[in-house]
Length: 104
Figure 1 (cartoon, one colour):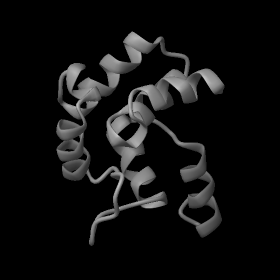
Figure 2 (cartoon, rainbow, N blue to C red):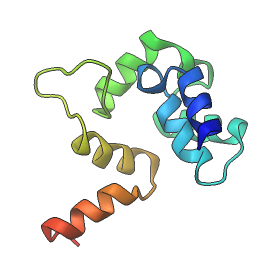
Figure 3 (tube, helix red, strand yellow):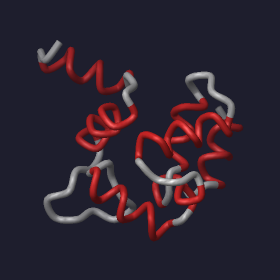
């Protein structure tokens, strides 16, 4: 977990796409494969993943959370719901939340 956290922090975490790449690494992908997968899902280049300006625009357009809260934008669990859809993965905390509120 420490290595994944370091990689995500090194890519800027939520400021860029480090959190998204880390999710894919935790699912067993190598870092290069994870970056390409996330870039494909976000419809951007791998270089854009570490560009904070480009990722701010992408994250806002996909509503997958940003560093600062914006009125009407998703954050927290709502952002995780959107990340799950965009990346095409299952996020355990989202699944647990859905079970708890009776959506599953």
